[in-house]
Length: 243
Length: 78
Image (cartoon, one colour):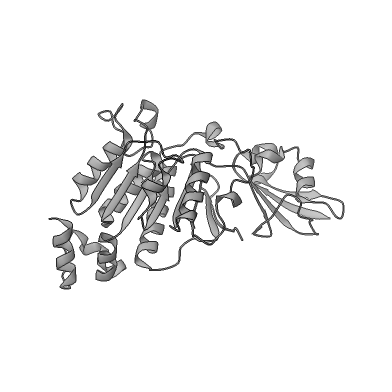
């Protein structure tokens, strides 16, 4: 079934069976909004793989998946789309193929390029939400600046070890400079020391997917002007006030 | 004055004797967050998020008796 067919059913108040378990939470209108939405996921590694999988199942109508990197053996411990078969393949291309397997209502546009200042406007323009699933601090800062400039909400997360931090950055609120304070900040954080075990990107990525869902449907409250910080080593889950 | 300091993630390794990274530091009146960080022997460049009583604050924040100071390193993985 194509997206137009699902939208036609929803317009008549009927529920495509594949979305039956979504409707009690987001309603028919919510599902319709998702199918009509456009989301850019920047990065298709640990965070991105989980986010893309979840948004495809939830039924977000269009995803632009941006990643210039290819899967390597050291990605296998945590990156959902890294398999022994996909080693050496571009991450964005693999992700788009995975989306096509999950949900033919979803149009997935693979961009096998590194996100940078030159392609930022072209890649983000027209998106309803941008998702930060990058793995370098300077790229994150650039993405946040560009999303705020283009007035597109950004769903952010970063991970290291047992630790993750997740938040939604609105166009008018504080940006990532509240989280990465140093002007000459190193490009990497403590993940260089701690690495990234299997479950941490799944946990942070799932919360990001819920933030996208709330932004697109207008349901609930996003984590804006705040940062959800978790450290599962010590069972710490805190909302930090970034004002 | 006494300041309750909570160290997160790798910063806990700067105070291994502190259970779960929580410790109390005795500071002179007028001490700042940066002074506490220096007293603990932590490189201030490693501190990216700094919370005082649950609100994001600068290194120059002057502390008061009983303040709770949270120090977080940069997390950047994806």
